[in-house]
Image (cartoon, rainbow, N blue to C red):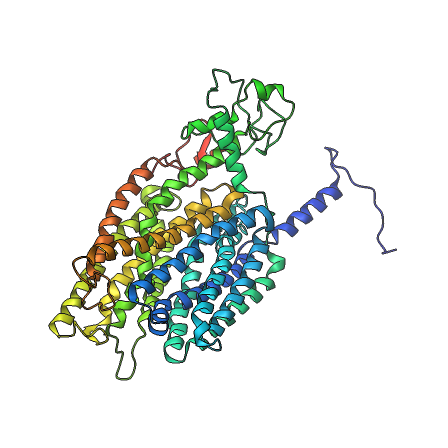
Length: 602
């Protein structure tokens, strides 16, 4: 009917159907046409627009709360921290929904729509909503945005990284630089928002400023849909929390069993490492599976086959778990101490949106005879520094470090995070010294009791702390992104992204707690305390010294934890040979250490 001619299948010498092979090759090429940079670029633009909207709001939020809603400085700062914190904790819920039910693509789509509706409501709250309802509607809109952030944040970066096939050498190499350039795109979006939108908010009006942000989100949603045919989509794989709980429950139920006493062997699962009810003794481990590690050995009891397991024809997943599942749970648990040890870094980071802006508002911001720099626009200095620092790090620092260490990334992920934590201490020290200089200048010029007076000191004194904070970002933030993507099990990577993001959220709450504690202690002897509405009479510099001391203590804890951290391992004989050929070490009994080819520890 269609003009085609039926031809008998041509068989090769092995008896394979050549037509079938051609179809397989065709579909493989068709599959390979998806993903890669030509798919990831759409997602990067979506994230740029979302960051544009977030920083266009967060960057100047303390100004709106204190000037338009008349909140005290400490209260406004705590409200900003609370909103940022909740926005960064909701991703845990979003990751659960993505991994368990919707998948990353549909979670991004739904959350982007919610985010857009929240920004529209925010624009209405500052314009047409009556004054006596304005505050309630404004905060309602803020937390609708937080819900949208919850679905967007944990999925977008992971979804973009999923576009690179780790089994394709070319795409795997491209993926190694992806996180740097991903972060660069975020910085571009944030910097443009800080320069353009904040100026509009200060000079034109809040309604127009928020309207611009809503328009950017609508454009982002359209861009995301344009690339729909190019994406590699991952199906939801089930709740990661169920996977974790099964191992914990199984290990607890067998706490008296050991491999030598009461044990009848180890359950490895089937050849590809999936959970099955076959191969109970696990004689075939498969080509790729997680290597067994010596840490958290109490969890190994979950994969010991005891008498009850051996008598059952079907496996009870709450009594017996395969090696792969147990090792994946170990991966998650090993990241928890790293998560905790990075919370103080977040306390330093959130100063950018709060007290740094209040400092700048009291200083001489003149740029020429007729223009004053909006105080929140100084945050763009961080973006500009990162725009320069990321390419330098990727193209100069990494190749040079690679020659010294032999590590494919120059330095390990934990070394990168630790370097950023050290710089965060320097940031707080510099911030304290500059603030002490500003207070001294206010005292010398007799404006200590005039909070709205311009202190005759240039706002560019703040430049060093903004630049150093950008250096912190390049090391710690990108390092955390890569660590929580790379070291999480593949099926839990949305949860890994949510865990990294929640560092910022919980750190914001920790910062609010530090502010509350400092205020409670310092107001006993001084009515206004260290953080009062009149910064000229307060001692924000003492608060910065406090953060510097806490950050130094935190760095010591991080180094201690990092020394005992073991990177993810897989069993893969082919990759072992490939790594040996190019000169990497770090092998033990056929085990290849991923991302840290030299040793188990940092």
